[in-house]
Amino acid sequence: MSGYKANRLSEDIMRELSMLMRGLKDPRVAGHMLSIVRVEMSGDGSHCKVYVSAMEGLSVAKTAAEGLKSASGYLRRQITDALHIRRCPELHFIPDDSIAYSAKIQQMLGDLEGK
Image 1 (cartoon, rainbow, N blue to C red):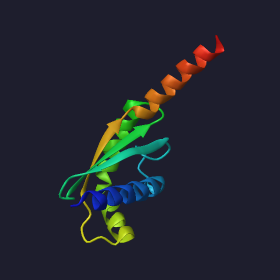
Image 2: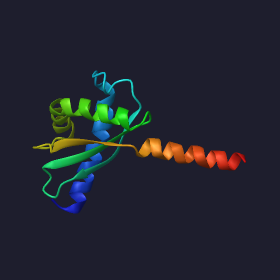
Image 3: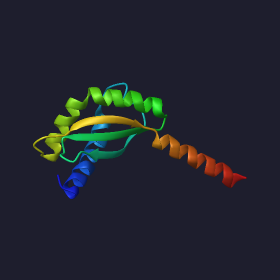
């Protein structure tokens, strides 16, 4: 898969997953401040790593990744229909703590500014 096409498809998948996550009723996913940090496609387009982060921390991101993994069949079907692609890549959800880390850095910078 060419670089441009893989990048465009990964951005489209990221956008669609962000919208679909809001509609999931799984208690591991619903009710949390989740965001998709980045999406990486494999070279042949058959696998896709989705990095999920939560404001509450890494433990919530891990449980959300498990919930998303159990809903991956539904998500793949919805992505295939929305993007009009023949075959949706297999989704691998990986917990990430970058949002909590950046919030901690922001708080530390605010503390330094206040001094």
